[in-house]
Image 1 (spheres, rainbow, N blue to C red):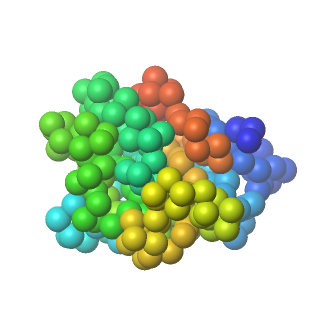
Image 2: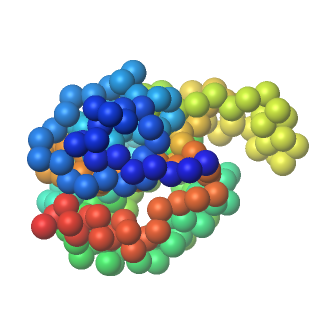
Length: 222
């Protein structure tokens, strides 16, 4: 799948196209997933939707509160789950360079549909257990966040059969027991709750380069 770039200036002409990253717009845009093509994410300039997320101890957190309490920008990652080797590899790569992300003033949250009980497994696989607080895995139990950020999709029957052949049962892994997933994505959100950078790619094997994410966080913080 091609990754496309959107800026707010071009949004009126190209609304609905997938996007990889975007320049910082001047003003926030009220936008919902119904304004865009499915699975293309929200672009830079959109107001970051709120959602209730759960940490690895079962505690609930409002995303809006996490953004408001952060000292700098929030890096919000969406991944498929700890069962996905591409996800855990990317989480490990980000974890290895967490100090650089933290130096930008960013707080990092990684969100998936997996149950909060599974988050500990993912932390182990992603080598995140020794990383200083600030890189936090959160469960999106109802997948409202994935839906509102325009990332959610149904896993088709053929893929379900393939996954089950690999021993992967999303019905038991996901908190809502459904065979739905988010497209992997990364958003950088400023203190005002506005998305300033967005990277979305339907090809789950492709993840944002860590250097680009650090650059986007630094730019938002600046």
